[in-house]
Image 1: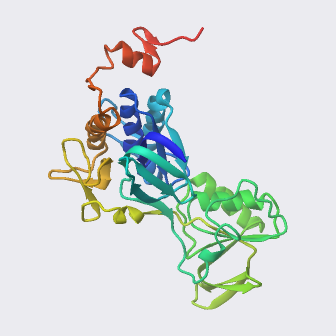
Image 2 (image 1 turned 60 degrees about the vertical axis):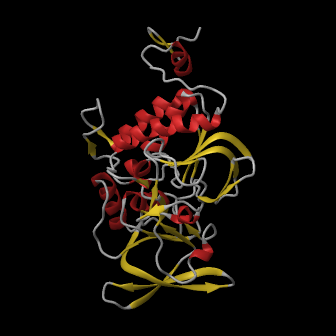
Length: 348
């Protein structure tokens, strides 16, 4: 069991900035996110697209914003738990919250912040009966780092950079075969990736199939082949040993809907004094919450984290008066941030 002052669900910009605001109040935190990397919507939906409304930053991409937020929060060392979903939240007799994740981790936290945006991003899966039973065996949602499939027939599903890049990487390992399947010969990928992919298709190192997966053939509990409809609507069979599904991600609200909090249109109702939910010790910030006048903007989420942090501090330090300090002048905050009046503290 991991005990912590605060647990944050969501490693998007608001979740990361929440950890920073907690750090200024000397509240330690852990962060959980369903994605295997921090960034949330910023990285998943507009990593390389410009953002123009971050105060003091004329323009930055989603990826650049996350990189800067991670640099900013670094002095407080929040612990990241990535590629995990929170399954259950249970209030305890002492007022703390018992939180369990999809990987079996258990947290005991004084405060829980939900900064899950529009929900946890989860891998899109083909609607094929029995497919999910092979997850972690022959079905993969990311290219395993130790994939040694030299004697395998590998099928990659997808049309994006990840799918094409995985097919290219696999083909370089010289497996028995690498096939990339998508419903049509149109891809959403960078020009360099697309050119490298097409070169390998032309040389026969990768086979492209225009089709839609419809079923599996199994033998002794293992997938031996897949069935698909080709471009003419005819059913075909393709031998498969390993199946790599890279169809992108979609947000799902998931278990949050069953944690006993007031909701409105799949969003958590909060008090605008401190962004607390109806469940004691639980706060919601960013796109996941709703209140009169709510605007779904990153800068509004940043504002919410400040008030939520002070609301949480009253619970973490019930016998301590928490004062507002300014990073410009507070020597205590300078120490926490690792800076002095002249800039970063030099280690000697």
